[in-house]
Image (cartoon, rainbow, N blue to C red; front, side, top):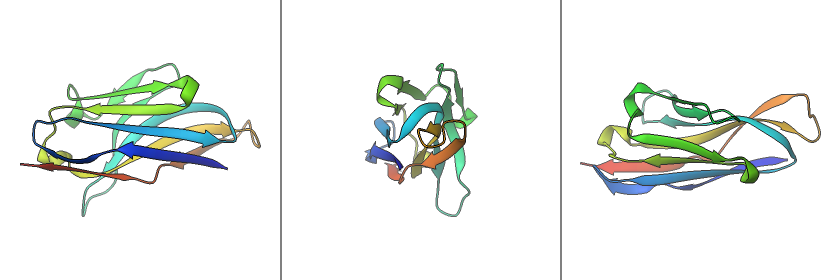
Length: 122
């Protein structure tokens, strides 16, 4: 089995910063792309940022210049540093990983973290 365990998040005032972490563990053969998504109340889940195994990054326009995604391949962990937070960043944030397990090392499977609430007050 594979698990993605998230940490970080919480309540912060506008202009503040938060850091999210997501660690993948279990029967992992290799990890491909990792990323962060968010879902605000009444809205669809949207991409925030992704990072490939070679650390190529991609950001939603709404967070460019404010959020930074990074990863530690040795720890199968992805991070997101969120600065200059705005009330519109309020959402549940989910990490996502595309990976290969030791049981099926040629089959790419997507896993999601449990979600963590980020609330930005004005």
